[in-house]
Image (cartoon, rainbow over all chains, first blue to last red; front, side):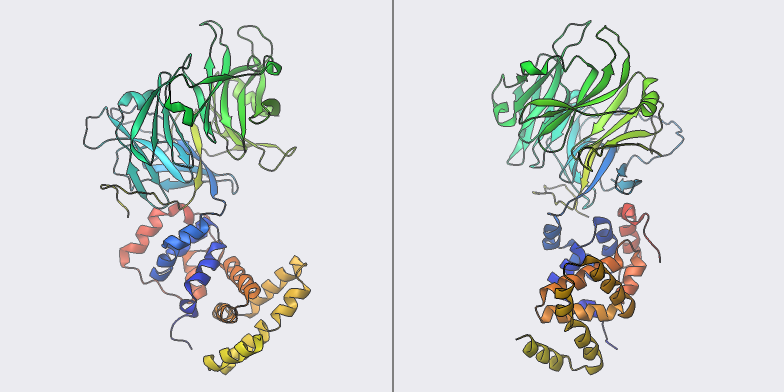
Length: 386
Length: 126
């Protein structure tokens, strides 16, 4: 009988090879086996080795009640800890909970994610309540970093956009803030948008958003884009349109944008049954714009049986994207609808997602989270690595 | 060339009972691999057989042998076999599989479980 288990005699490379065949969940489980496994599976070269593998793509829910300046002691039906991030795994059809208890903030509010890192608004500990900071963290490695402080106006009205190069933008109608790792401060740029940007998204090096150029009684949506490198000078947004597009923006009620796969944008909204002012909608339509050819086509439409649930509520939210999965939530609807085209052309699927956790009136929003062991670069004094 | 290293390996190991087993498994492997390279189903069946007939400790030694012999295909195959054997299994199962014991301090393991609770949901206890 051997004195010690043979696994200890394997060279580290081989051990890494064994575990690199396993999904992320099993790797995390194996870390708890013993100290030896913990060391191997947290070593930087292992993390590096598995960083090129496809991530665990999940949908994270944004918590409701963003403007929580006073504590509301409501008794909700489901008591959900403010430090829990509810995520949905579409491949296994189950809800998971990531804990954010390593963050020393009262009520962190996650808003966006890229490459495994989550960006969230949090109250700065030292300064008055009205100041918020954007914090970047990885719930899997439990590392976090606080970005330089911003005024509360940005957290209330700004949309946060991030990309895999960890460039962060906070966008409002009048200006954009921009932060990249190289300069450790926010740069501010004036924006020349005609109105408040709606559902801004980041696709490779450009930001795309819808703006209403119509009148107060009749909306007219148009698509605007801006290259990040051009951001550094004013007057940087340009209107994207082609004559062939015709009235593509007029057939949808309250359209919004979601990232498509590759270099594509999805535009989603209720399909108007006529061009009259308050026309009802016959279903929810998903249009797709190829950014290279600048051509639109129809990507999908919600089946009637599903749309009936959305028809009753006046508003619905759309979120997701990236790998061709889009999610829909509506007021007083306790389930989410999911459109999935990741299986390929012609094989799109619509299905319900049940047991949506958390409190709220059903109208929730979320973002795509690629669970990875991405390390946070340049830890600052004050960040805690547990 | 391979036979020289094999002989050296067995001499170094100095454990005849075990090495006989390994010799019969590892050495025929290249032939088998070549023959059924295109046939994934047979490879799967072979993997199942291996898991049934060979104890985890032996499997680990097979990996050591393949590594020593610099036999990449066998190494890849055995590593994948081990990975498949512990896929979706609980911490205790993985421990038993490799013959390990927890050497964490009393609170440490609990802390890890709490921090990564999401990964423990829905695994096979077996």
